[in-house]
Length: 237
Image 1: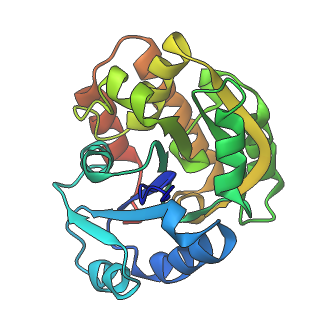
Image 2: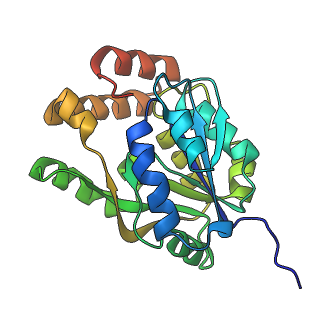
Image 3: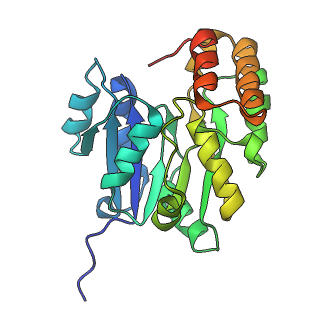
């Protein structure tokens, strides 16, 4: 019987001015994942002014143009993805070796969605302390930098990311997953950039993230969350 040409996993990477990270991430995904035909890589660009699109195209991956905003970009990527599993990954986050096999194994063991533990590319004890909490399987310990894998079926049933959220879209979506399905934190570490902490200050940024959590859990809407983020947090993109 001829093997289906449908990939097992679609890796969806939302980007805005990430050419340098893409130069490293795309080759890594191909080298450290399984067979190339089993992994589809989709770069969803939100209007980069650098060479992000050209870099991605040079590696032969699928490249989409989307309105700016991670929720919009990730939904756009999911809309064209062919894999039975969707894996949302930030351009400055590097998953563990054999990430695809680890994900597929988890899904075969009664898990519908999940993420990896996180570590920062920084020796800071402060950041190491907060990254340590990513091992706990609680919604409050989740974040987009940890990446997210989810079955296509569950993603579609939940309606995807809520594109009203210009920030906090990952947390809002994962909160819905926890309420409706099985979520697992895999005991392998993903390495993510500490560049936003370097730009804003470690303690200051962590404080503002805590404030955004509080705003959300106190019932504030996506526009309030974005206004706070835009006022207090410098962006790297």
